[in-house]
Amino acid sequence: MDWRVRFVDYPEQWRRQRAELLPIIEDTIARGDLMLRRQLHDFEEHLAAFNHSARAVGVSNCTDGLRLLAHALDIGPGDEVVTVAHTFIATVSPFVLRGAKPVFVDIGTDHLMDTTQLAAAITERTRVVIPVHLNGRTVDMHAVGKAAASAGAVVLEDAAQALGATFDGRTAGTFGLASTYSFYPAKMLGALGDAGAVLTDDQELANRLLRLRDHGRVQKAEIDGWGYNCRLDNLQAAILDYRLGRLPGWIERRRELARRYDERLRDIDGLRIPVGPDADPLRRDVYQNYPVTTEHRDRLAEHLRADGIETLVSWPIPLHHQRGLGLDHWKLPRTEELCRQVLSLPMQVELEDWQIDHVADSIHRFFGRPA
Ligand SMILES: *Cc1c(COP(=O)(O)O)cnc(C)c1O
Image (cartoon, rainbow, N blue to C red; front, side, top):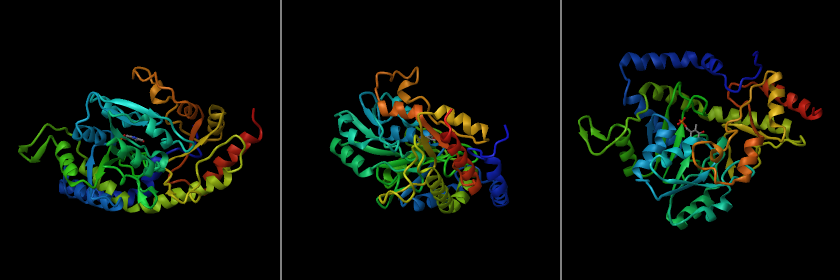
């Protein structure tokens, strides 16, 4: 396939960053700084500062971050975890694997948790509420905070897709007890492999997570409880630290690209686009993804592909319809409809303006003459 617009273009990313990344990689390896060294501590410090959090704990990936939190909070059988079914399986699995029951809330028009339905989902067994800040947009955290507080439940934010997004002047991931981030290569801030972090203002919890990620070790030879091996590689941390410095500029570029899509796609009958970057005074979205919806999703994807444009349907099957999970008693009409209609258009820092125009022109042609 001769793509004109890739969904994610790792080779192009490498071409642009190679000159700056190679010396960092060389230096880290040459020093022998491979595990739990300065580069990791630097990255954790910079990440906490970027997010206005007290502490950041680097972990092997976002899923493991949630796993460590579920362990630290002693989640177990009888506990309920309230979240959405329009998310990655990893939001839920660490809690279910400890014996907790997931409770799903349907989503609103912006693809995020419909917080007006939250109160009805909360019971006396609710231990955790997990808002998922999908696509670089923050859930209404005032509503989440209120509902969780009324139940005495803890809020953990799945901020895997929202590093740098804000809601009412505060950064996504700073509202709850803790939040988790993914640095999977395709995320806003990507490593060259798996990586993640947990952020929190709770010093005691942060120290607990530091031990849990490293076999329960306090010092090299002293163990204060059962733990895991969920460390963030030092080399990945060094790469992430460099990239974190560039993230503010990258976020601006993503918002610029979203603005361009917005202007070009705003008035198409039968196509719904995300809230524009300047349309919501309460939020600053960072556009991890640019998802559009249409009843003709599969045909549109095919049409774009024929024009050399690569798109993605992240989750064509909602969690509760996945076979083998035992969740099929849930009925979530808006989640189910979205899974049939949603299509993510190319959105990455490396895109040129002409590529956005190429995508927009192709979409106009599709809706101009529906087959
Ligand atoms: C990517 C992602 C995760 C999992 O992140 P990993 O680092 O791959 O474990 C969890 N939740 C959401 C919403 C994600 O997009």
